[in-house]
Length: 383
Image 1 (cartoon, one colour):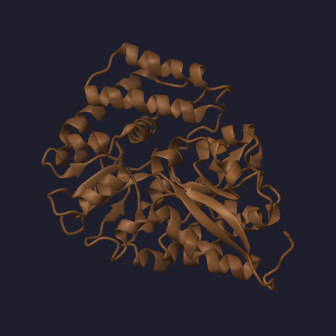
Image 2: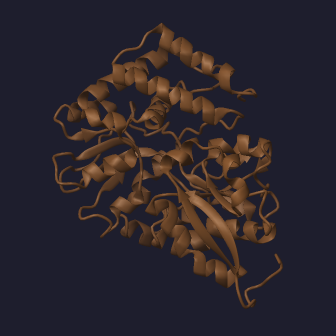
């Protein structure tokens, strides 16, 4: 029964789906004693791959779970499929919005309702080996110059190629899907040319790398010292996670202000198929709230979405200042549109962009194909 309290003899067991990395799993599991104490509920977490997290439709698996950790562009399709419960009426929703890192909380709003709560905040940032580099490049010109020495890595698997493309467009003042125009062709051409220059300067294997692959390469025994335009993973800044730690800093930019980075992260949502809606909603609210986020979630290896946690001295001491060093990037990040069909559009765009970078060439036909993608995949207008 959803009215069960902490005095009940046995907690209700909910099934949760998250993504398969210590950042995606460990903090959630560490918060379980708090859920038991406050709501007499425990969550058994399963994990799917990072690729599935970005590409798989929520409706494909929502019916098998009570709690879901999702990416914000999937919200519209999940809502249209009836896969999620709205979270508008939960206690403390205004506080969660106020305490959000950047637009993490608002990124889960759609058609005037809240469909998930920001439990994890991330954006494309920079990483470096503090024993090899004094810091990360501030400007993209610095990154290119350093890349010429063989020290720089940049992941550009399809989804990461898309993220960098979107980030650079936003940094150049021409973000995707703005003011009724999906693409500024002139700026897009300049951005693709820049990405090709960057690809020429980093190792060839970066074409098949994601941010985790780059982080693992940076902590290994080699000559790499800096990673650029990769989503941050606070785990690599923690003592003992790997033999050598990484430090993180703002993403490079053209003006030094670190704006426009593609917002990532994750939100905790409630499946419309749950048999325990009240408990599942209460559990989601607790996982996203300051008590769990500042405490067991972050201590257990999670990357919180709560601003109080990002400003916590303890959290920054245990992560080499990860949160303070990258907060500016998070607060100025670009948010992907929440519109029906975006996940499929993003997948198609990811391959188009990455193919052009790998081939080291593009033409007007490439830009034509990118411009046609919204008509092929979206079923509502981008506001």
